[in-house]
Structure formats: C-alpha cells, structure tokens
Amino acid sequence: MTHRIAIAGSSGRMGRTLIEAVLAADDCRLAAALDQPDSPALGQDAGAFLGQASGVAIGADVEAGLTQAQYLIDFTRPEGTLAHLLACRARGVKAVIGTTGFSEAQKAQIAEIARDIAIVMAPNMSVGVNVVLKLLDMAARALDQGYDIEIIEAHHRHKVDAPSGTALKMGEVVAAALGRDLKQCAVYGREGVTGERDPSTIGFATVRGGDIVGDHTVLFAGTGERIEITHKSSSRATYAQGSLRAVRFLAGRSTGLYGMDDVLGMA
Image (cartoon, rainbow, N blue to C red; front, side, top):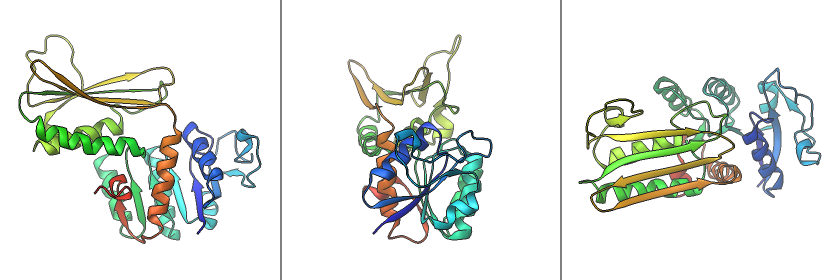
C-alpha cells in the first residue's frame, strides 16, 4: 500500500524534515507540498533542498494540493491548520496534526471535524516523548505525597508559543494522575516575593534560545531525593518518523480523533 501524503508548511524546518522522510519511505509518496502564498519557495521542486527532484512543486492552493492526497501532515499554526482541516473534510483527506497552541474552542472544532474524517493530533509526534508520558503517569501516582513537581522545557528561538504543547501535555498527564485540574494548579511564572511554594501546584519554566530542537524535564523534588524524567530531541527526524507511523495507523480508520498513544498501542 502506498500512502499519498500532502505536507503543509513545506519550506519550513519541520516541513522539510517531513518531506525528506516521505521521500525516503518505501510505502509513502509525496502528493503535494503546500506553503503560504507569499513564500519565496513557491514553484520550486519540493525536494530541491535535498538536491533531488521529487516531481512535486511547492504551491499555495490547498484545494488543488489535496486533490491527489489521502493524508495531510500539518505542523504549522493553529489558524492555518484549522483552515486546512476544513479543506480535508471536504475531500475526505485524513490528517496528522503536530501543530500546538490551539485554544479550547479550536480543539473543540477539531473534534467536530473528526466526526467526518480520521485525525491523529498530538503535541509531540516523537515515539520517545509518548513513552515518557506513560512513565510520568506511573511516577505521579507513586509520588503523590511529599514531592513538588516542576516542568522545565527548552526550545529554539523561533518557537512562538510557551509553554510548549509537549510541556502542557506532560502537566496534564501528571495532574490527571494526581486527581488535579491543571488549569487550577499550574504556575507559569514566578517573580518577586512569591511566598512559600504551594505543594499542590505544578510549576512550569520556559527557555528559548539558539537552535534547541526540544528538551523537556519533569522534576519530582522530595525530601532527600529528586527524580527527573527527561526527554531530549537532537533532530526533528523523530517527529517526522512518528508522523509517518500516524499515517499508517490512519490507513485503517475512516473517522475519529486519535492521539499518539492510540498509534503506539498504549491507550
């Protein structure tokens, strides 16, 4: 079976990584490479940055681009992703969404669209990160008393949302394991005289700089010991390979909203 895939944001860092992965996969074919109307890459061969011809030119017409595609992989911005999903629904194209920064209303809209097409959406497509989420659930249940929890994340200087979607997902997993609501217990910044730490809170710290692909650490700080669960990404290739696993998972689904835990059989 050959999976015909369209890539959104094709001239960006993640878009290029996805294109490289698709071109290298024996069971995948690049059906379309999409980008913004003002992109200087429009009209170029999508594989030019690799020094190879893919036979697919980068274009801005989403409607035309999806004509030959069975799947769309999108790691762009929330507004653009939602517009792409509406186009996917109109054509029965399945979607893999790695975009982060969605509002609750936007997430609800995606869930509504998933009634008509199959979607995998995750704040992080890395297989390793999703294994870490399972480890965090286990750790939080065991360390539910006497441990302060802090989540530290670092990304490159170009990332526009904070904390990262992955850090927030980690917080959600930990909070749920402890029977808490992250919206009520999260602390996103500290400055000045903050007073003694509230033990029921989950703290977040954000670092932005350089070309850091993505580092996440969840710290459980107790009396006399610290437990740190860390994931570090050295390449975006891990997100691309996870996305292709999500595509293969969707091949057997027609509708529904899924996460990477479903893709990996850990749900």
